[in-house]
Image (tube, rainbow, N blue to C red; front, side, top):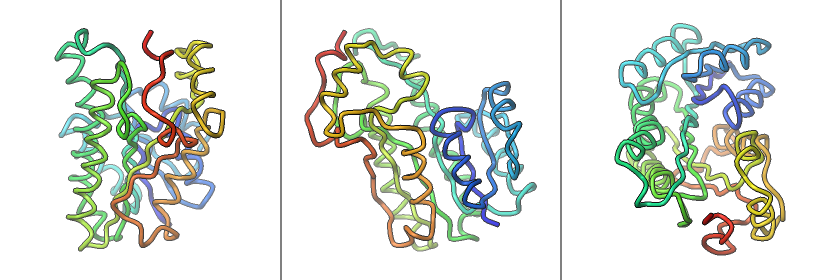
Length: 248
């Protein structure tokens, strides 16, 4: 039975991805630093283990890989989904805020991939990094977040170039606006309407729709796909840069 390791698995896209892997007969190591939320999310899910660790900590990352292999014996897919967002003007973004974003969004995928390489070599496995449409196109208030996600896309290219000789594939998914609980809590009506107007599909995506892209790229159906960034964004990348409603 194949095994996926999903970081940031306690909620949102990570939890939706976990559930889709389980539906398709995989086992899943669920990783999150929010212990209470992770426990609640995994309680009713079979064929999973939960590991409460922070992916920005090198020692914690080693623990994650070791515990996954101890439980399941293999890693066929690594989904680097854990991330944090910090939105604000450049002049108000302190170095501490910048480093907090980079630690999880960029250091985490680097550390997790590096630690998982030996196991992925054994399975000729797949890596999927969760980037963002903000890493493909500039927008306001996203100097740390957007830069971190652009770096994740470049990291994906490096992984594909260097790990392909081992049969390891590396791709990224760049979600556009997704109807998560967090997004709906912080997006004003004006922002929601602006997104709808800017998206060719005229709606937010769902967590399940992003999960479908992730699981596809981890599957044998994507066996000749590597070094790609798939924008699951309702066409947002195609329609312009920035929205006035997002500036306030």
